[in-house]
Length: 130
Image (cartoon, rainbow, N blue to C red; front, side, top):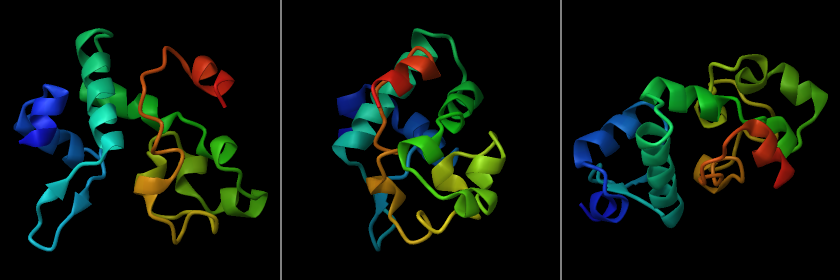
């Protein structure tokens, strides 16, 4: 409820974004979702993509899957060869089943790639901020 109010996003939409992998909130033992400030910021960005830029959820997911995580969080060539996020633009890096050694044992919610939450017009502008 709090996340819905802060982001002006209906609860059912937030659940849909979580189910589609756009958000990875913390889950309590009782299966409740807890949203961080980054998650709220990401919700606001998703709303902007949907409402102002005319993307649908699949488009937002495709946009996030194009973020070059291997540049933002440098990884070795060997790790890239084993990583689904590097090999295919169909995967959000935090959803990849096979990950490089640099990413295997980290909490994706704290990764600098997931922490990118503000909307960007194109990948070039996002990379210029790097």
